Image 1 (cartoon, rainbow, N blue to C red):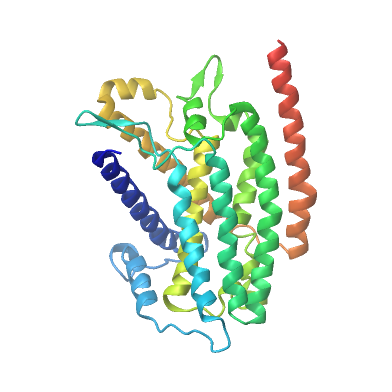
Image 2 (spheres, rainbow, N blue to C red):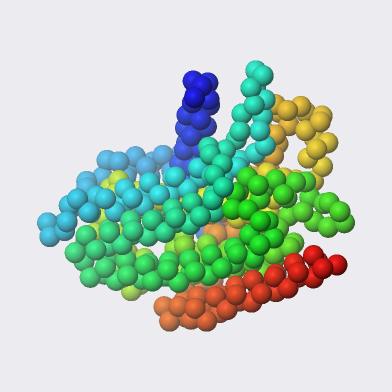
Length: 351
């Protein structure tokens, strides 16, 4: 393996990791600003210009705040919980194609950490592991409210992972691959052969099911039952403080960033945009693909804004409503979408 190739991957991993943490940090500020706007308030505005340094102040507070481990808890598992949650959140971005390959000094560099032919299965595996961080943290706290939040999180994630997986089957039937890079390439441009290339226009119901499940997987309102403060004080992280609490909060925002990137890649063309071939021809193979990267991040930021908008618009579900929606509404709709997609594909192939 070439040294240059290893350097490229190390640099790419470092950049993606730094961007993930940066987006997560400033998502906290964006959430507070959006909440303030929707509620007729100002929001953070003391630390830096319009509160721009507030995430740094919050991060510093998390680092220097006293860390308490309950005497009756399992210390090793108590530390393992937030560590696992943060780790699984960070590694989910490894298979996301951030743009077309670029040429630098005669070398072709792929803007993707790794392209595996089971990229979607990797994403689901990482998402499934993430719930263990919540479960371990809630159980190790030796607190009944934390345990209740952990149990809620486990049952919620199991319920909505099934619906999420079924919602993607129809998309995979159309694309014929589990590689996110191949799926992104199939959505090249915006319009081809008299129809849209982006999968949203081919699978609108699948996208609707997927984004609802993404809200549940990220524990975002109206699916934030695991940390329902009016019932469980703070849920699975009630006993946490300092950096361990910050790890849990950061993992939620990183998961939101990765989920937005996956949705943009699967359904909204990823780095593709109208007239991209003309732009690449004008700017060249070095700077042209960077426009696609900016387009992808614009889509990601829109979805992050949508996550925040919904939080301050829709009230929290009751727990029976949450399970009813997952098992009796989303799963049957996902199965129906698979059947309809299969019928349409067979009709098209027959014609």
